[in-house]
Length: 190
Image 1 (tube, rainbow, N blue to C red):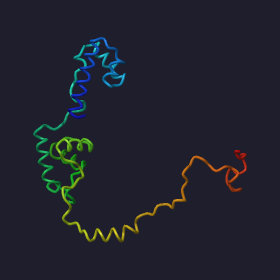
Image 2 (image 1 turned 90 degrees about the vertical axis):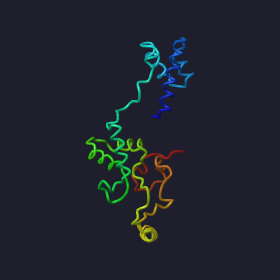
Image 3 (image 1 turned 120 degrees about the horizontal axis):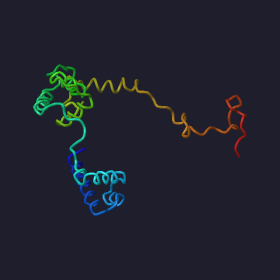
């Protein structure tokens, strides 16, 4: 959740506390603040237990970042150097898996791929997006491959008449071939 979202949520809760102090019932609070009745009842219970302080935010949820601010600065510098500087010479792409491996190697901290993705976004990077085209790319070979090989490899779709628009409705027994399963068992509908 963004900082703006947290501030808005906090302000809505504080407004709810003010309404509860004015003896406004939870369903009416939910209607006025455009929140679910369930949230309004939960907030009312918290307000009854400890007043407006119980509705105050306790900060962002989730686990804390396992890297210090100095380590985050170092990680950003490592990412700026590029993957080749850290042993990935095949291409110049930072994938989330590579970043998770880099964090483990440099800081001895284990991050999941999704955690590494969130950390990259926090630092202003995005995974799997090359900054420029590979220098070794041969545009002429790519064009030839697209025109010659891809046309052969590409699977043709089914003809338009080969599929049914309604798979749940079977043909009536009267129009089934005589040797088809269920033929002649049921009387046709009229």
